[in-house]
Image (tube, rainbow, N blue to C red; front, side, top):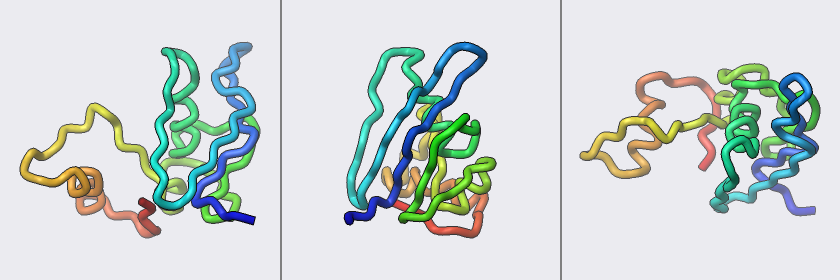
Length: 116
């Protein structure tokens, strides 16, 4: 059986009676790049907020390297090697794309793996 570095299974999140994310499955292998595309309100941000520990899923499972992880908060997600980089982040023109992406680590290091 092939192992994914990240797997989200059966992720659900509601706000009141509105389903923001409904039964989402999402898996990523090492070295893959994915894009979440959809209209406003489709659940993209909600799904990433669940993955990064900002919001809790109502149900479902997240696995990192085959181990089930409970994303209680952003710190627990970062300790599992997951962090969200917001698109509004100001970049430093003198740094490469990779240096800009990982520059947050120097300012606020948290023990745990960095996945990429």
